[in-house]
Image 1 (cartoon, chains in turn red, cyan, yellow):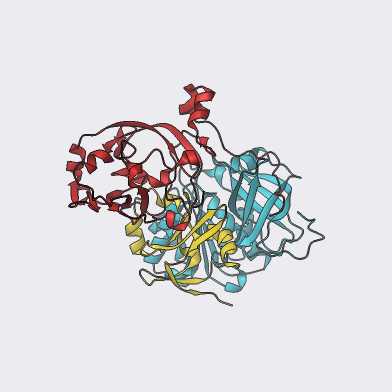
Image 2: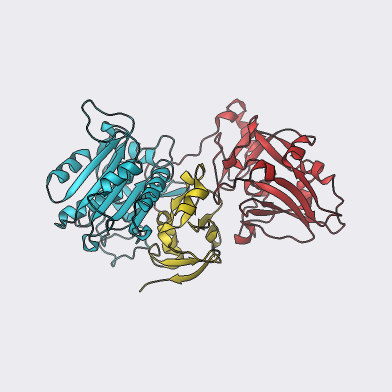
Length: 214
Length: 254
Length: 98
């Protein structure tokens, strides 16, 4: 490609979020992954229409390379030991939002209810609407991932993934699957919706793993 | 980028450099930018252009804008842009761009949402806010082409000061060549207002469509929710779905 | 069209979708010609639609184009630094008029 024409006076919107205003510039820099800019928005990014499963027909399931699959109803999920989470979120579209507040249950707690096969190495999160995303199993253990049903103290809005979504703060936000209905445990990696089209299988924002081959 | 006059005729795939020839305020929040494009190959009413803005560090964004002007105007196109609060591009266009500036443009694009006089009518145009822009290209073209095809534009705006192209539409409707413009003002109506004063609904569309008949071609453009409503109502009123063309702008227009 | 309304009534995300005309420029690059007036057949439900009338979701890692009748994915486009990836598996029979 030849030299790009530069538009006089155009800078683009790449401001620091208001939520980050009480942080020192050093801390803001430290917490902003490479190639990202800070925002206090929570953009709605969607690949399709918002699914609407009535809660009395909703369930969350763990299946695959486990001794036996286990399933929770909505009430059962909410009754699990859960906690607040305050985490930084980065989207591959370059925004980072610091200190987002969620409430939900750790994936560790969910996995306590199954026995993992010794071959278990990967997970696929599958969702209403057909979305999937894949992760190494190791990336969702040890408090690195949770299933959230509240954001900012309120029930998770449908356009943001409600009733429940996966949140994996250490990975680009496309891995935090909205409208999650279950985790499938596998012995091999199975690229999900975006991964099968060129996005990274791991997606660590600190290593800038945006695209496969990064 | 090579000088337009020296280059061979451009394919629509290429980005061209347009010069802003004029800027005009249509309403307090809407401006029209006349872009001079010496190598422009022409367009069809309803098509759009892509605009690309690039910062010094290479960061770039693209937006699509419907062409407001008729193809009969050669070598320049008008785009009409509503300033969206908090937007990334429209505030830049409104606050920074002045005549003489150059902008990267690609097009014309779109073979679906197009009307030309040769397609005939009757013609029903339904616009919500800045959705009127591509329909204005059709209305202007219809006048320049001397078409007498019966045409009705139903135009929804929030209030009288927000009607884009108001004076020109009054003038075109007064020409007596078969174009009628019906306004609906959804939030503020002036004293003595005799037009519609509510959001577009099936009853309104039924009244507007009635003189045109069930063989009308319909084009609806504007915010997604409005366009969805209009399209569904028109189907219920008996218009075949393949005679209804839509262009949704997303939640707030361009 | 009634099916589409039922699926999308009250969906806050619907307002964020646009018609495929809005990605006409991108499709122009992918196909080498304007395809918004071209007809395609959905691989999931068999409905024939004009490309310009397909529903586009574009605020995310890539562009997703869905059938207006059954909402299944017809086309996906992702831009990566090394190139562009297009998944057309949701469409059968693209009719490209001369």
